[in-house]
Image 1 (tube, rainbow, N blue to C red):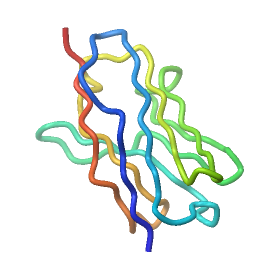
Image 2 (cartoon, rainbow, N blue to C red; image 1 turned 30 degrees about the horizontal axis):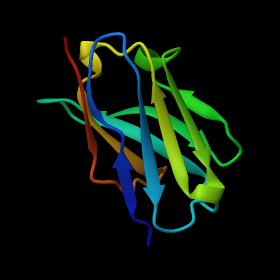
Image 3 (tube, rainbow, N blue to C red; image 1 turned 180 degrees about the vertical axis):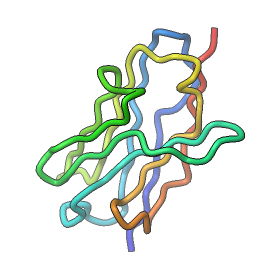
Length: 114
């Protein structure tokens, strides 16, 4: 059983940055892929980024070059550095185990607005 807790969301102006953290209650070292999804109002959850145990990353096109996903297995933590934020990035962001999608965090709200 793995419990995931996200933090780091908030209100930021367009062009600003935030760093999200996802802390796991158990070890993530054995979990090959960890990822981030987001859900904006009225839309389904969408995949945005993942990181493998070896550090390989995948991004959805809309965040490439702006977002960076990373993990620290020693701290059981996955990060999402978000730069050059846009209003369309406004959403609840979730951490999740991949590819099974078995474990989700509770989400953290990110609002990009002037």
